[in-house]
Image (cartoon, rainbow, N blue to C red; front, side, top):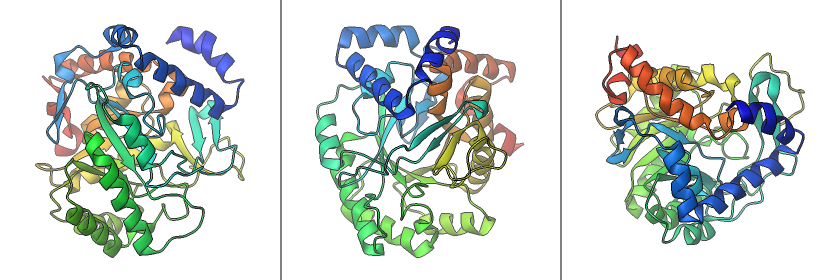
Length: 361
């Protein structure tokens, strides 16, 4: 990690953020296409401590640490990224139709805050292209596909939005270990508040039930502004059997005190997202059916302490993304090495025992 910070990062930060991001995906894609290289990387970076193994919604993973959606938008580099030590990789967001997303520039670094500002607007190749790319994928790291409404740059009707999700799920679910429905994308016309209206979420879940869901489904939501919003959301989900968990998205807008120009568009990930994310994890864990549903935590995860804090607040899985930008690819290995020490310190024999420890007591 020190080599990355001292040598690689200063050079990379001189280039455009999106250009660097795309090249990083290409490198991971190339690694994944050569099994011998991919296996060698996995041997060096992979999680080996049995205390890290988790079982979530019927899926066994070698580590609770996963890669959040937004890094590999189109499923190009699943094998190469999984070799870094992730227990799961979530790709996307993917919509039923191809989208170019928002105009550039749309990705910005805030080094003084260890943050990035994201205004991509979910560019992706579309469900058909991603499904074709994933066909015949070699079994390995658990794969989640994050599904979103197509960003066409204009507001869509209620029926159009729901139909968009349903068609994407129908096309993609056979290629995923789980699906994550992005219900709160902060960078699209329809994404921020559409499903806060309880009836819309009920319509979506009913439509998906009619299609026939074959994989566990996680619902990705932004931090709730008021307890009534959380209560209404969980009431709408009700006893829907295929909904097995909830994931925390970025809040729209900018947290106070950031070193960022007022007119810079987008949502903020990294350190500034941590407080709101942790609050939402705690609130969800206290309210959900823990026998059936889990929490996927993200926001400001840079080291083992950050990940462990989310686990103790109620997250069974923890995702990162921005840490790769600031700490480099070895950050996953460092977290996987640090977590067992924290578990031992607190007398836990496994990650599962630690989940929600700060909320239960």
